[in-house]
Length: 337
Image (cartoon, rainbow, N blue to C red):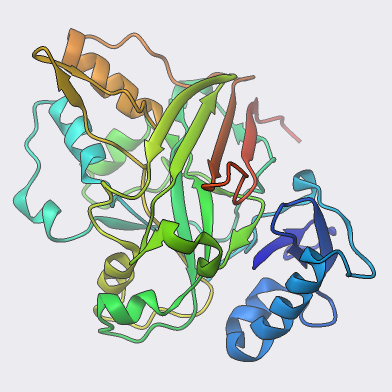
């Protein structure tokens, strides 16, 4: 099942069901107005949405209309919680290696997770508005899941059962603000502005064999200014799967329906050829590209994003069709009101 939230002038938008091929949609008004309503009563409402989804896919929905990603807010336009991890340890290794800093041993056994702002998300086609290019604007191509209720001390296996929907995310980072924040020892704040999510959120059953115990074995595609810069495998090198991330989050508290958990930047290891390192699958954020340049050449040549830059993030299934639709954004300046 695929779900989206259409803009209607309100904070929470209108829930729509979207066809598997992303061509058509249908308002879910007869079942629920908001995605949070469905998450709060999943066992009762999701089968009704599934019926509408099946009808839509068979071309028999009476009031279907052409699906337009430009109309989409984030599938869950604001959430009770947005917790983002760094589940691909290669990303951490790269960034630290460029600074000659070792990765602590517990990073390989204990996930890194921070809590971001969940009151203001961006739609997949909304501009990324930033007050200054000097902040070091970066994209981060990630996966994210939306949960139902997950009880305190849930095991990774139990936590997997709490996953309701999967999305793509652009976890925008302002790299030049982050060092001073981290130095304070209290985590991200200003360095992490609003996050964007894919046009649609997708139930796990849609992935078939590509979903394996909390990992999605598909390719994360990142296209910066029209140039494909990342074709990263999202499954094999995910150090901590989503069940482990959620279990870590609820070690000392309940995780409630409407929580979003991110994977962190999808990242793949280098390959060695004739004694030289190469990253043939590219990168899912500019910080990694800059880290690679530092490791290989001792200097950085790639700049962060500028006003007018574009970023497209997408994932295609084994059939070559877009799974979530694309995050397709432009960097724009803040205009004083």
